[in-house]
Length: 254
Image (cartoon, rainbow, N blue to C red; front, side, top):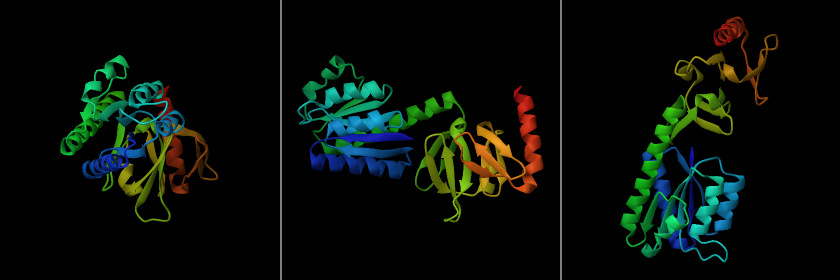
């Protein structure tokens, strides 16, 4: 998922940016979320340094009224922690656009606040371009699990998925357990079992596991321990077939 950040110290304009970004995420089902909206560049920088999940999309006001960081300084520092992130400057100062080259921040776009209809359209163009570009990169890097829901489009590398399980407290809800996040969406284990690739196995009516991410299997107790130490269930009916599946998979990989 692409995290979106807004740093604009004028409250009314910041609220407008938030509205546009959230509307486009919802309407277009972009695999994005608004991670932070702030007028304080140090707050944004702290998030990127200590809490960011990877490549982000940043909408930055150039003329921030901050004693130490304007938008260009902020962009430079963001590049230290997110070198592949997408930076978009939004400002009233068209004459400052040349400074993006001086600061070597490789800005994706430079939007002038002269007409908010144009600003809204340019924001959408940037978000759509990022979504398409990241989508192409995902296809080149490896196989992805893609699920379109009413809320969003989910993209997750197969190799990053540990297992999928049902949510006991809600009907027809699935939790995808990945390396660094959990994603909840509508679905059934039965419906997903045939849509995943050969490394995944339905071990129980409530679990599908990535067999490449298993640390150990207790066949007697019916418990599978994953590499992150979370446990999945193995039904007695599946135990024998699962043991044979694991053995064959190991032989094929040798």
